[in-house]
Structures are given as C-alpha cells and as structure tokens.
Amino acid sequence: MNWLLVLPILIPFAFAALCLLFRRDAGMQQQLGILGGLLHLAACLALLAHVYKTGLITMQVAGWPAPFGITLVADHLSVILVAVTGILGLSSIVYSKAEIRPGMLAAGYYSLMHILLGGVCGAFLTGDLFNLYVWFEVMLMASFGLLVLGQEKEQLDGGVKYVMINLFSTLLFISGLGLLYGMTGTLNMADLHLEIQKVQDKALLTAVAAIFMTAFGIKAGLFPLFSWLPVSYHTPPVAVSAILAGLLTKVGVYALIRMFTLIFTFDVAYTHGLLLIAAVLTMITGVLGAAAYNEFRRILSFHIISQVGYMVLGLALFTPLAISGAVFYLLHHMIVKANLFLISGVSRNAAGSFELSRIGGLYRHRGFLALLFFIPAFSLAGFPPLSGFWAKMILIRASLEVQAYAVAGAAAGVGLLTVYSMTKIWGEAFWKPRPSAEAGKSLPPARSEGEIWLLLPITVLAIITMVLGLVPGPFLALAEQAAHELLNPDIYVKAVLGGA
Image (tube, rainbow, N blue to C red):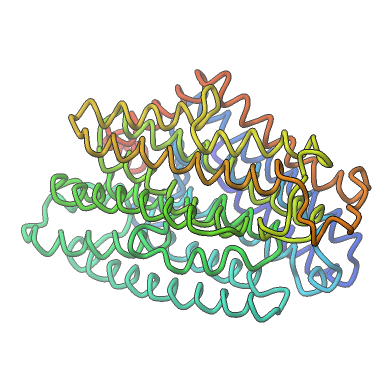
C-alpha cells in the first residue's frame, strides 16, 4: 500500500500537464482542474486513513535503500497536513471557476495551481533535506507565477519582493545543507538524527541550526523576517491569496517542527529558547499590524504572521501537550485562514472594494455570507466552542505547565487583540450601513450562478471549522499521536532505516 505515498505528488503534476495541453480551452481546463482536485483530495484522504490505521509508512524510491536513495515518509504530522492540502486545493480550484479570467487560464493558471499542490505535498512527505530543498524551489516557482499572473503593477511589485526575500532564504537553506553534509556525510533526516550525535563541534552545529532556523523562519513568516508576506498576499486573485495563505507559511512551520524535533535537539535550551522569543514577538507584531490596517486582505495577511507565532510557540515549549497544540493549531488555522480570504473575495464582489471604509451593509444584504464570515473569524479569535478556542487553550495550558506565565499572558493578550481586529471587519464590512458615497450603487444579485461557485467551498470550509470545534476529540487524538511520534524520533528512524 506504500504506493499511496506518491499519489498526492503525482496526481497534481499529471493534471498540471493535462491543463497545459488544453490551455486554449477554458472550459476543458476548468473541468480538468476540478477533476484533478477531486482525485488529489481522494488520494490525500486515503493516505491519511492508511497511516491512521497502520502507523508511519515509508517508501524507498526505485528500491535504493536509505540513506542513499530518495525516501518518502508519512507520519501523522505529514498526513494531517497533506489531507488539509487536498481540501484547500479543491476549495481554491472550485472558487477559481467563478473568479479566474480566460486570459489567466490561457497563461497556465490551473497548471501552476496543481504544481503548487504537488510541491507542497512533496515537502510534507520527503524524508531527506535535499529533496525538501527541491520541493521548496518547486513551490517558489509556482507561487511566484500565480502571484504575478494578472500582470498588474501591484502584483509585480509584491511578487518581486516575495521572490527576492525567498531567494535569500533559499541561499541560506542550501548553505546550511552544505555545512550539514560536510559534518555528517548524509542529508537523510533519519540518518541525520543518528549522525549528528557523533559531531564533536557543537558550537558549529548550533550555528548551522541557526542558519536553518533563519531560512525556515523566512518561509514561515517569523519575526523579524515576515516583511515579504503583507506586501504580496493581498495582490493576486483571491483564490491564489487563499491557497498561499493556507499552505505556504505552514510548510515553513512544518520544516521548523521537523528539524527541531528530529535533528537539532542537542541544545534545546538555546535553540528552542530562540524559537520561543521569536514566537512571542511574531504573535505580538503580527496582531499589531492587523490592528493598524483597514483593508480586508491586509488585515488577514498580518493575522497569518500572528498565528504562525502560536504554532512555533508549541514547538518552542517542546512538551507533548505543546507539540500536540501546535499540530492542532496548524490544522485549524489552515482551514480558517484560507476560508477568510475566500470570504474577502465575495465581500469585494458584493460591495466593490477591499477597503473597509468603502463597504458596509453586508449583514443586511448578504445574511448568509455574514454567517459564513462569523464562523472562521471568531474561530480565529478563539471564541468557544470553535476550533481556535481549543487550539489557543491547549497552548496557553502548555505554557502554564512549564511555568512560562509571561508567555501564556502574551498568548492570551494577542487573542484579545485578534478579537478586536475581527470585530473591526465585522463592524465595518457587515454591520454598519453602506457608506453614503456607495449607497446609490446597486449590489449584484446574491444568488447568481457565479456566486454559487464562490460560496460552495466557503460553506464546506465553514462546516469543517464547526466540526473541528464541536467534535474536537478525534482531531486532538490525531494531533497527540503526531506529537508522540515527533517527540520519540526512534519511531521515525526505525521506520526509515529498518531498525538502525
């Protein structure tokens, strides 16, 4: 059954090629895009079910044994993130049917979207650092293409900043790879766990850990390395913003979790202490940025930064409860954040702008949309019994358990500021009357065929958010199992190296 490991990677690339063959036929591309998204989601869920039933699985590509060949590994953390990738991929593809113009389709929109999905799944499933680097590059190329596809000035400006800073991250990543390989002679993650314990020069090893922390910190949007994110995520089509918001920074968080639970655990007091400081500052600066802005997608972009701080906080605390909290936070936030971006697009279509000062009255004219916004927005803010409440509560409790009272206070305070910025969007966009300058303009019909394609994925993601909040038990159990595997690296090492 280990062939299930390659399907979440191969299916998107196969449909990327098919969409490219039919790039002049917009209708065929849309059908292929949705079919590819459906098959990809089915493969991701099948892999999740298989790992849930049997435990961690591996595959040595072409029969070359680890650590010499290419290894694919699926543990609980990987398959949770792969499954969410499938859900968000299909949601964005369905949303795109009503949003993406034919010109963008002809330029390869669906091909880039599928390449991005394949790259993200490859990053989550690879078992060696060189291939993680390769998948990062695949994601960078696909995401840059999606960011600038409309060729508007604002997109090009944001896209160039995005790619330049991420290229710097790539340079750090490959430098760290070279140093690590020079010290250990391997880049297989399981083998690295063993070989790194034989390295005598711990000071140099700590420096290499800092290089990887910086490289993945840029990808994740950690303080003070997040400047690329709020200048780029509000510029592309909404479906692109949603998929980037839901997935890309989380790949950086995933890489940090994998590296600092499996490989760099020789000086936890120093490395995880640095991560703790970065996590708290990321939470605070992100939420202050969100409070300062008055544009829908910019507020959401700063909230990505703030919420990444919570996830890295779980890694930095490095206890079973904290790690399971970080995994549950990833699951909750990927769904909620992508959904909020999708809702911002429908709000823009209804009111004509992303600027909160220019929109209003959506509660009166779009009651169902207001309900759909309420669920993810107040889940993000941590209102009980929505999923964000459980995620924040676990991390605050984990902070209190290790007597990090200031950290727990910061997490709770950032939660309150998140409530403020979400109620700001609610009050400005949904609750207040339409501005007088816009009052004379008629709203488009609420139940047009196009809006149904927009609302369908939003509704599904809102239902998933409700299920995560109302029935958290099975998802918390998955997160706890993921944390158990992460904090017991021998499970991973034995599965990959066969009992070494």
